[in-house]
Image (tube, rainbow, N blue to C red; front, side):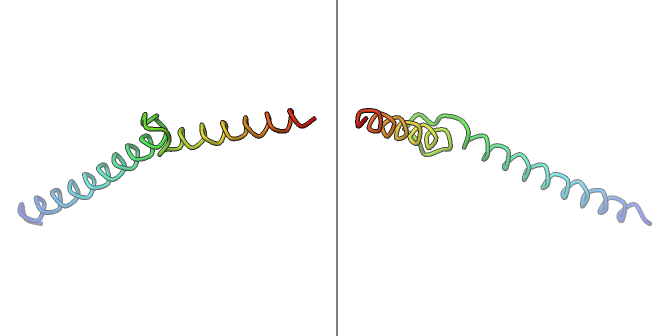
Length: 67
């Protein structure tokens, strides 16, 4: 193999590895953004869970008051 072939192979491998790293980084950032509080009341997982808990508390209060 010539020097040009080796250079092309190395550049190709670096490009593939870089693309994989960028993809994993994007996925981690995306999933972490779903878990942290966004401050606007629940367009992520934490906000959704908080709203469900509030609704359950309301249902428990209704059930307890009917006894």
